[in-house]
Image 1: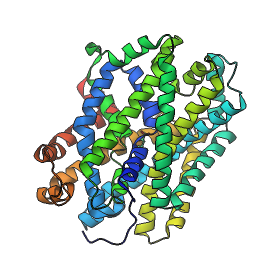
Image 2: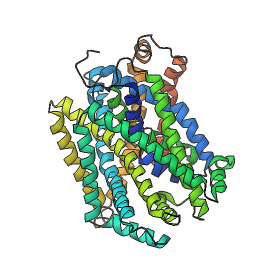
Image 3: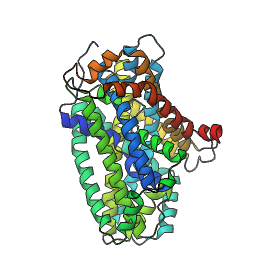
Image 4: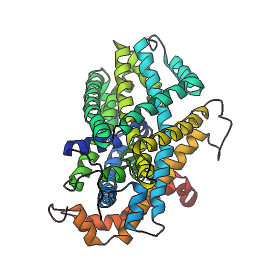
Length: 454
Ligand code: PHE
């Protein structure tokens, strides 16, 4: 492909940490543990690891291929590779998904800031489980504070984005990701030294195979996609900043391993503590905002643990909001020839509006429903359960149908300079297996699977 002068990440470690930052987020620390709790613990973990290996890695390499080969934003990439065709819809789907996800993701990210401030001020102390539940509901349904924190989170993201790819995204990721790992390990050690740790570990690591059914398998696949940020252009956009020597295969492997490690460590941090205090592991999405502060406050120096935990959550969220923001910013900047700064301002304002609507829909606007869901849940449903699997499936079909196998091989082996041992298996997977499996996730997540097969 013709290459114009374009920003690139400066170092190998920068590439990996920025991409891990994109993948590691609320999905690992908030969503993964409660999905695991809901779906039977160790059995879910096993299936999840299978999905990561057989679906996650091949699709991630494929997204890297599109980004690095085209050196363009996700919409521009499809236009450049297949000019004048409808394939560019995949790119637009990605830009729109990233923009909408960023809207509601910023709201949840903003909540973490509220909890950081509360932990600092000591106001989490001396409460019991029902206090935590009431306060969370009062806070998340109120008008002003959640919107304020959403705005603060978007501004933080904005500042990093306008500093550029190398100076902003890469530098921030290089600092934030190691800090995130350190905090996570400290919290795991704390949790593992609690008296009830064994029970939590048994739940996590001793599979009960009778728990595995089609719904567990399909939920695990959906979670794998969300967690690896597959299907909506973040990985394509980041890969467009990879250098020509970046090894796409090892980068995909490293990112996947680190993302999975963070998810497993998050579960190791949470479940022993949950069992220690006799709390149900199936507490659902509130696990992190209601159950955990309750768990921490029962420990010595509870406020400090809560503070450290919510900083961890905020950092993880921030490295993901950057990647979501970058998808739309790069698109507007490159396709409409507007400066990067102006493009970022447009995106931030737009995302703030979506965030405000999502936030209010939890409270004063909760009566407005679309297909029975409030706007927040509707946006989550449409993006995570329809647009992401659609994007992932179409990316595989696109590469399987439109891209010559030799061209694919050239790009993923850096023109023959690195080996790809299972290239044919990989190409077969991307062309046939992945689209079918992703199609099944899609049917499951939208509820169509049950409607058809039950
Ligand atoms: N992977 C992120 C997480 O685990 C979420 C995300 C999805 C980020 C899609 C970017 C794109 O939280």
